[in-house]
Amino acid sequence: SAFVQVAGFEHPYPATKILWSPDKTARRDLLATTGDYLRVWSVPDQREAASAADAARVDQVALLNNNKNSEYCAPLTSFDWNESEPSLVGTSSIDTTCTIWDLSVPAVKTQLIAHDKEVYDIAFARGKDIFASVGADGSVRLFDLRTLEHSTIIYETSSLRPLLRLAWNKQDPNYLATVLADDPRTVVLDVRVPSIPVAELGAHQASVNSVAWAPHSSCHLCTCSDDCQALIWDLTALPKPVDDPILAYTADAEVNQLQWSTAHQEWVAIAYNNTVQALHV
Image (cartoon, rainbow, N blue to C red; front, side, top):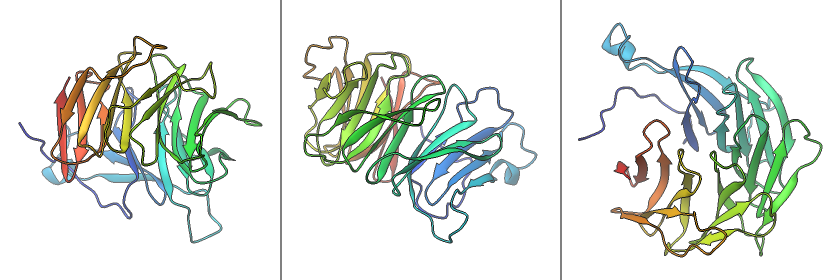
């Protein structure tokens, strides 16, 4: 079996993230990308397209820029699409800010200085109000859209080493996972017990690049690394130490990205070099 390209589009700068809309009631398929700006694209339904050209055409339907007074922009490092309220998208930027966008307008809902240095990732919890971010200052910060006057630092790395990635457990929103820069460990946090990791997953032999919770389970997590491996962990035993993964897959090169499918929960996709693979769990 093989992947077949059905459409493509030019992106002005390298995309830092791409996500499909979680809105299952939408009349059309939307995806969003970040890079220089947040862009939203409409992807045609292959079954309804009038011609092959229409089926392959992806249209930009929104370009969201909150820096109207300058020709320069601070690159966006990542974003997350709120699953409970699909009109909300949160972006993170190297200018230390996080911005929450309302796509129904489309316009900025709120922008805040989130960290002391660059913000590298943002993730919504289950529900529409709570989100968290990580950045170059080595902290995980928790925010509530209802009370943005303050935030809560729930974890800081011991040497203030940058935190690159963040994933929120949608089945049990008490748990988050985060990844340190140039580190083989994945840190699992319990928001009820700030400052102290509930687990450190350390079976990788090189830097961890991405982390994803199982969409259907509160205790399973997948990580990938420069050691060419993708590992699946069972965290049922927490708070007891979790030393070894339950499944491992070795790719032909460093694995730099992964996604666990919400629609097909037995499949995990990984990316390495110029290759995408779908793994059956």
